[in-house]
Image (tube, rainbow over all chains, first blue to last red; front, side, top):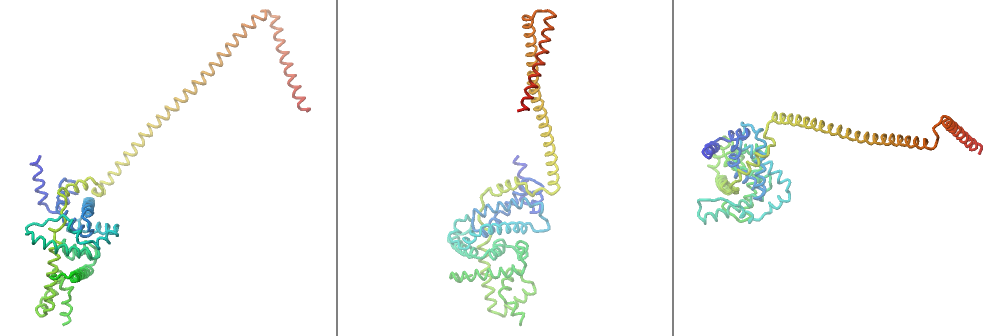
Length: 202
Length: 192
């Protein structure tokens, strides 16, 4: 039994997103699980930075993947799969924030200590480096959190998920000029906040 | 000169670092930076800032998910069948549902009609049974009364033709007197 399962897992892990989508849409077992495994960290990371709550982010991530599974038949292979699922995640995150406008306010005024509850993985660094890096990271995460949603989502998509401007346009549906302008403004706002906090070197 | 003035805007510098500036404008910016210390300094500062952002928000710092998250999500998603099937499958499923619904309705109809007929038959049987019992009781009572009256009349009245005629006469007389009394009674009621 295990000998027959192993080649399947290996072939799924090396398969392209499109092939996994096709196998999942045909109802083959394992294809969709591999897709979730590939995108669970990026999507949960994006959602976490959008909603600011780890548990809510996990729930929303699950909801997003269920939506993705339900929409697989509507996916067109000529589009990049990652862009397509970020679009679904973006819509779900925005809907969640609209439903929880009070939560949004508390997210913006959240304290830095919120970041320390997050289970993170960082390997290959000395304890001092880890501490220093973590401190700087927390500062930046806090500043990103303080941005208005319209700016925060673009910063996260660009710097956390490494999407190009064109991909951000596809995900958010905003015009290219608006994306450029908002990203520029968001970075200027962040730099100003760092200056206000007396943080140099950025 | 005006081109140089436009190209060294911070927005263009950030787009250049993002690799999103058009090649011609990128080349113009590079040329400009060679001659402009302020823009070169801005480029270094922006590059450092973006590096910090990239490393702080990079994927290794994405929140960890539970170990069996993918498996759980896949099971939940696969058990939720909404939207997975294409339209033809939906139509086929709808047809099956309609056929099954009609068959169930027909079977229920047959079953209910049988139940109604059986109930009506049972009630009718009971009603006819009661009526039959009542009729038989009345007939038996009348027959019994006839037998008793015949026995009594034989004991009291001698069995002769003269006595029979006398009895018949008395009956006719009684009927006549009775009708006379009734007509008189009605007449006095009208006068009053």
